[in-house]
Amino acid sequence: MTIDMKPEVQLDTNYYKVIGIRKLTDHTFVLSLPKSRFEFVAGQHVSLSITGDYQSREYSIYSAEKGENLELLVKEVEGGYFSPKLKHLKVGDMVEVHGPFGKFGLDEKNKDTHQHVFIASGTGIAPFHSMVKSNPDLNYHLIHGVRNAEEAYEQESYNKAHHTLCTSRDKSGDFNGRVTDYLKKTEFDKNTCFYLCGNSDMIFDSMEILSEKGFGRENITVEVYF
Image 1 (cartoon, rainbow, N blue to C red):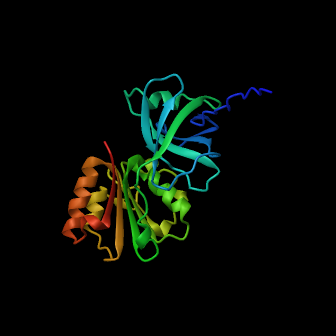
Image 2 (cartoon, helix red, strand yellow):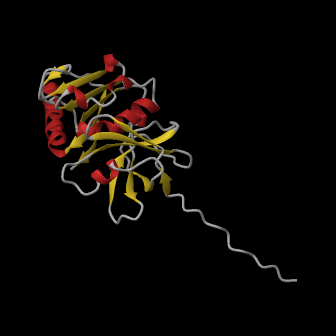
Image 3 (cartoon, rainbow, N blue to C red):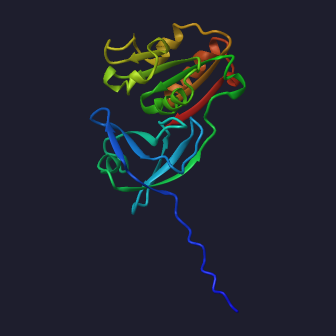
């Protein structure tokens, strides 16, 4: 007797339905997708595209490793091609997600012995939000550089004693000036791991400042947003 074996159905697990869009400012929002099948390490990023569109962009994961949803922090780029399309997504629309990618994450060997200093500009705060939410007992200090306090995305997520907001355009933050100005004026314990995420100018300038303070490349982990 011959038995016809039907091929096993392969489900494409890269497509996700938008389940929420959380507006933070006029140009910044959090895109929420189902977490169900997706596993990642805090600090990693994904490649995101809109169904039917030929372009994709990379975004750091904003949510906790064990969070209910997979969340991405997105800022609309004026005159850009991709981010304005994301801004106009609606609940129920489909997007395609590939990943996770990258090795930007906590220094596991020093996780419990060192202070972890997170240095971010703008939406470069995304992976640090994920790290803090994924590790509630972590000894951290988040230094976030923005133009004004409106861009201090969901700062209530962080312990106020562990969060320094640097505002360059006004005095609404904890420190008036750029992140690099704050770093120049601050002393850090030798048992410190530094993590930098944001625009390239901030990162290169910060690395030079930290080097002058005696911290080598082995103390610093970098994720550059161009």
